[in-house]
Image (cartoon, rainbow, N blue to C red; front, side, top):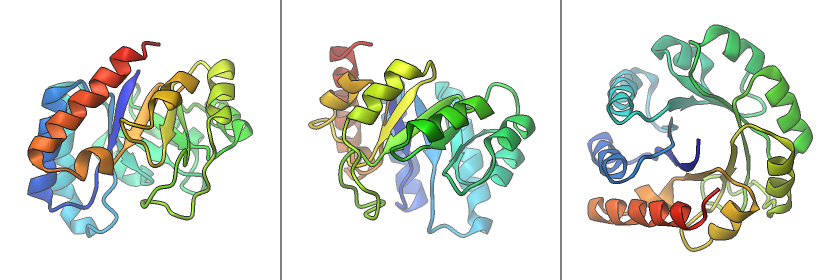
Length: 207
């Protein structure tokens, strides 16, 4: 598993779906994460079902951010922060083959525990300053290098990543680059152009 880990934003849903379609049709997105903090729970059914169907069409693994109950309900993967539930429980209750990921901040020890508990990828960040989580401290690249050398699961980097600043991140060991605004913060035509630029970046820095 390698490439672009795309996280949804809070665009109006029809615009967001059009952007996701543009991105997935341009490049084989590695993972799509549903993260819609401003959307009421009652409005999420349509969105999640639609994105689940879209991901099935494009053969993209789909995960829900921080909500194990929702992941169980829809039979998809989950990404859990440190305070968002048990990896052991997630692995036990979710269908076989879906992704279970854990945010590990800047800690190799937290990643080691997550993998022991059954996580099949681990995420580190913020790599650079980010508006999504401005309180998160920047971790630099050493943790990515250590994680790549130590673990066999995919390593995900998150936080302020752009095409322009991510070559060193990939070289340091990131298999996945988690992105929101660098893709979805653009116009519809801009999304397809930028997604292709990410594809070219990963091709230029082969594992």
